Amino acid sequence: MIQLKNTLFAVCLSLMTVTIQADDDILKDYEFPTQPAMNTQDPYENYNRAVYQFNMAFNDAIGEPVAGAYNRYVPSPARTGIGNFFRNLKEPLNTVNAFFQGNVEAGLTSFMRLAINSTFGLFGILDIATPAGLTYEKEDLGQTLYKWGVWSEASFFMVPILGPYTTRELVGGGIDAVYNPTYPYLIETDDVGRIMLFLGEKFVDYTQVVTLMGEVRSQPDPYIFMRESYMQYRMNLIYNGNPPAPNLDDFNFE
Image (cartoon, rainbow, N blue to C red; front, side, top):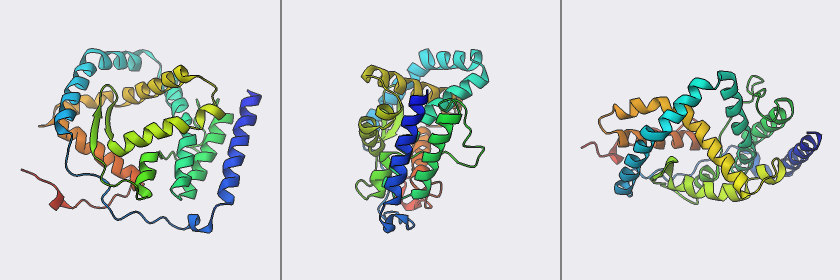
């Protein structure tokens, strides 16, 4: 445990040093690219609808019963601790991507959350940082690619079992997984261990939204409802909760 804490503080110190040495331009308010963030069309709709139907069948047969049992039989404090643990594992990527985007404040916030929760919160099981005013902010390479102006108009894309993504998020997530500083610096594990942690994280995320499946099914077109809801979610992440008002001319309401 002592070795883990020493390693963590060494990583945090390195991140702080990089930040202090950054160019002054990084400290200026970031100006978002002017190109559209999302493709209002759905070029993969036929594929997406087929995968959506498969995922809903999997949800009904396996996912919902298993998640329901988890939510019923695992005590709430334990579920909260497990969720906090997996959220804490995301903080190194949040930190790195926030700095890549020039958002120093968010990067330092994620860095401090990692340091506090990993050392005083039993490696993240207890979330001490949030009550202290350090709000969790999800940052990933998909967001970074857009803010760099590298990839505009991401399209909606359904992944079997794992659910909705955008194309930019999917590619960025693959790159994030390769260079994720969580594993070489915080957790020593092999590829199998990394896959198991990834699946564990996705399962915990799923258990937190499984109760919304009934609302999705109740919509006139559940697929469109899921697509538009997820695209809006990604827009909120990209624009830090303040997305621009949609241009209604871009949408076909027929």
